[in-house]
Structure formats: C-alpha cells, structure tokens
Image (tube, rainbow, N blue to C red; front, side, top):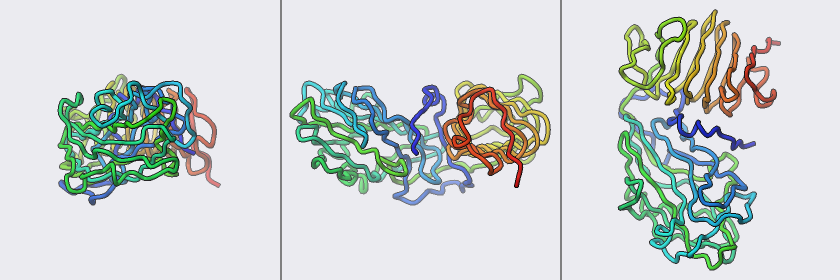
Length: 379
C-alpha cells in the first residue's frame, strides 16, 4: 500500500534525504541513466491550482546530495472531477494555444532540484511517465528549464509533446527532448527549476490525467548521473554530557563528532553513531544524515528539536532511545535491543518500524506519543 500522508513542516525542514551504506570515493559518479530523483503521483488529487503531487521526491538507489520539491500545478481550474488513476487537471481561462501562451498564463506544473555543496547532478533523461486525456482536454505538453526561479530566461527542453488520447501513453521520450545530447548540469550548491506547460484544450470541463499507478511509486523521474566530492564517514557523537546537551547540525565548524580520534563537523551524507547516554539538540533547521545508529548499553540517549532526515534508524544496546521531533527515515527503523520511547507522533516518520524482527509498525498498530516500545522476545 502506498502512503501519501506527509507532515507540512517536514517539507521545509528536511531538505536532504540520503541513501545508506555508501562509502564514496571522491569524484565517483553513478552510471548515466540511473534514477536521480523520483516522484510519486498520488491518485485522486484535487485539480485546483496550487495542489501538489502529495509527497517529496526520493533519491534513486545509491544517489546522495540531490533533493527536490513537490510538483505543484498552476493554472488548472478548480472543482473538476478527480481520477483514481492519477492527477486530473483542467485548462484555465483564457485557454492558451502554444507554449509561450501556456507559460504566460501560468498553465504548468513546476518543481525544482537542488544539489548540496559537494554534488554535481547531470540530468540526461526522464523515467517512464504516462498521460491520458479527454476529448477536449489539454492535449500538448512542453518542458522548460531555468536557473532563475522567475524564468526571466529559460531553455526549452521539449517544445511540444502530444497527449494522444484516452489510453495512457508513456511520454517520457518526447518530453526529454534533447537531454540525451544536451544534458542539464546542476552544479554544487545550486538549484534548477522546471516547468511542464500544458495547452490545447477546447473546453474547460474536460481534463487530462498524469498517471499515478506505478506499483513502485515511481510515476515520474529525472535520470542521469551525479558526482560527489566528499567521502561518506561514520562519525561518533562527542557532544557534552547532560542536559541540555550539544547541538547537532551540518555546520563544518560544529566539531562535536569524532572521526576515529579526530574531532570534526558533520556532513549531510555522514553516518551518525551514538554509543553512550547523552542529550542531543537537533538544529531547528533540521539535519540530514546517512544511517543513524544508537547503541547505548545503559541510560538514555535523548534526541529532539529539529527534524532528522536519514536513510535508516537502528537501535542496539540495552539502553533507551528517547526520540522526538518530525523525522524521516526513508528505509525504516529497527529496534533490535533496548527500548525506544517516542515523544512525538512523527518521531519515526511514515515508514515501517521493526522491533527485533518480531513485529512492525504500521502492522502492529499506530504509534502515538508518548509511548515506549520494547523489542519482542526471541522465540
């Protein structure tokens, strides 16, 4: 079952979702054609302008340092029928007849892609994405790109791709235009902006549908390669003991971590290890990490404040982890020993939590704070 609920503040505070289990050699890219970011198009979305696809994109396997926004539709008329097959939208008034008119009339979907300070993203194509339409619905799409959020100037990636008709059709090849020979490069610490314009309707009451039925939740994606100039490390927390504790952020000058015996700051792709009782105050802006492991054998590891975006959370050791805030662990959470105490409903995000391999949430029932979970006994 696909899950679409997201906390609103997660969208603004958790900027980077990273993949686990990678030890990148500086400058090592993934192969061209790999998925960089993928979006889930939720079925039955409202047609009104300002609606989003329902969730932030996630990285393809092994991709780090690249984030994206939700997809937002503009220009679409409100009040039209929704579709269980995907995202139905309608033309606005006045009805544009070409790409320039659609952009001027704000008839488009928009999203952006951002790289961190260590990563270059090269976009060379689009993953499979399908559309269908009613007889008098918007019938043509065009994709443009800009480094300017206001699109004072832009590049036309594909000028006009037709939506054939009522049968869902994969339009990725047409919409990708010249990307295979003229790639979009998003340099480190930069943002690129996309607009997918639509036009050609002969009626305001007939809608087109961006299909949202992919079994793996990958209804639209950007493909290409990335290159990282930073090595992922596993760092050990070395903050001050006792309340209120030290602050965890992604500043290189906040040297509350140990890389072996050397103090260091925490990069957004590093793995975080908390081996002993401590208090951790997460920066209000949130932090990003690779994996997060709490292994205290006694006492409490208390982590709260801003949101944490990590690929996974693992609790080992017989001590207790007290977790609060609005967090996102994209590959889920595992408690194999000790106990987990939740101080907020969103502390584990929306993915599966497994307790000593015996039971899991959401199957075990909703997690509500405050609540304490112990791993089930073996056997």
